[in-house]
Length: 125
Image (cartoon, rainbow, N blue to C red; front, side, top):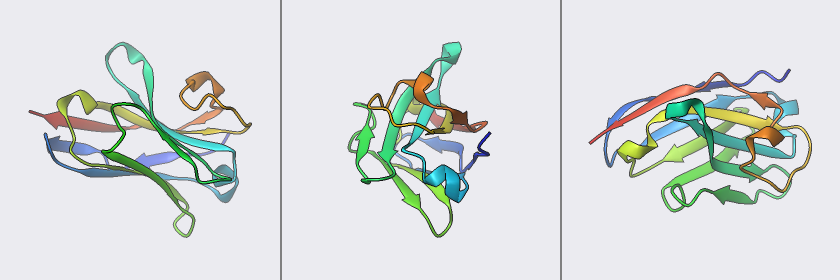
């Protein structure tokens, strides 16, 4: 089990910004795919952003594109999600995840092997 610990959630008004961090080990950061998911009502996990740790290539959901940025800070050993121009529909529990084995399906949560507990983000209108 890879230990992942999210932080940085909170309550903001629409248009505001938050940066989420996920503390991870060097082993975790070396895995092929690192991602952020949002769990909203109904307990479904929707993919928000993913990063290929080998190439640095990033992938974003349609909603997140242009507003969110995923990046890895190797010095701090964190997987980060910078979120700008937040909207009420961004509300949910944000979880970071690691895929130990390569997958081309960035937003298929079943491909991810390790998950954090999540951090709550609430955006009010």
